[in-house]
Amino acid sequence: MTARPESEATLRTPSSSLSELEVTPDVPPRYRLVFPVNLIQGK
View 1 (cartoon, rainbow, N blue to C red):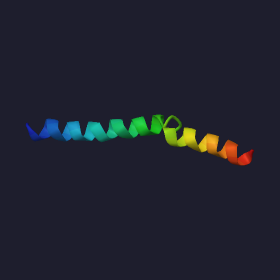
View 2: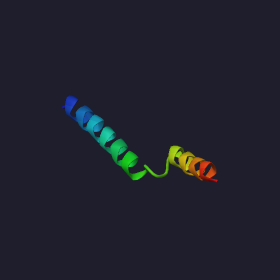
View 3: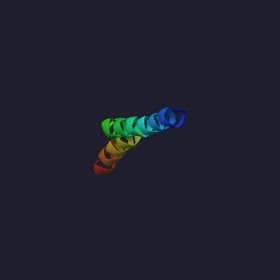
């Protein structure tokens, strides 16, 4: 029974991290830095 909760916890951790990455792809600073850089280069 000790291995089951551990495996479930490990499976839930990556799944939650993946969902967070998918939900916050436009929020990371990388995108924010890319947009201003493109605007500056365009100008």
